[in-house]
Amino acid sequence: MSRPRSFTPEEQATWAPVATMMELLPRRLDAQLLRDDDLTHFDYFAMAVLTRADGHSLRMSELADRTNATRPRLSHVIGRLETRGYVVRSKAPGDARGTDVRLTHEGRRKAIAATPRHVDNVRDAVLDALTPEQHVQLREIANLVLERLDPSGQVAGRHRGDFDPS
Image 1 (spheres, rainbow, N blue to C red):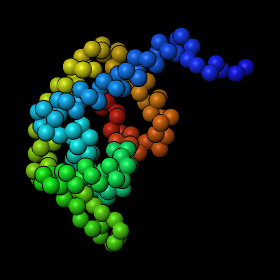
Image 2 (image 1 turned 180 degrees about the vertical axis):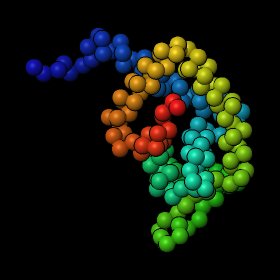
Image 3 (image 1 turned 90 degrees about the horizontal axis):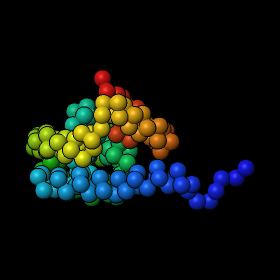
């Protein structure tokens, strides 16, 4: 038996709010970070990934994988962050084609300073709307979808346990 070519009413009732949330949430995250810290959400995300990396440094290709960014987009963002003194790029040791990105002391201070306001915004927009049981449900649902979208678990550290609540 074949599946219908359009959403069933039940599927549409599930998908429509998810799709709308995916449109509205990035705007909300960007607006707060731009207003309060002059960073986009992606700027903050890349810096946050670097804060958790050994030595606050990653190969550009690894940072691209962990942030799910294209190389050109990441290169543009890193260039902006470098101009502001938040990161430095250097040739990767032993690899003439590789580039490492390191979060500077100033970049780490910026990311740490932005975190409380970002956390407050995420809590207000998403987490505070949910009961503790719904937190567990949302985490389980998100992880099920992520298993299909990112089976290797490379984006943002799923394979490193970054998503474990412990």
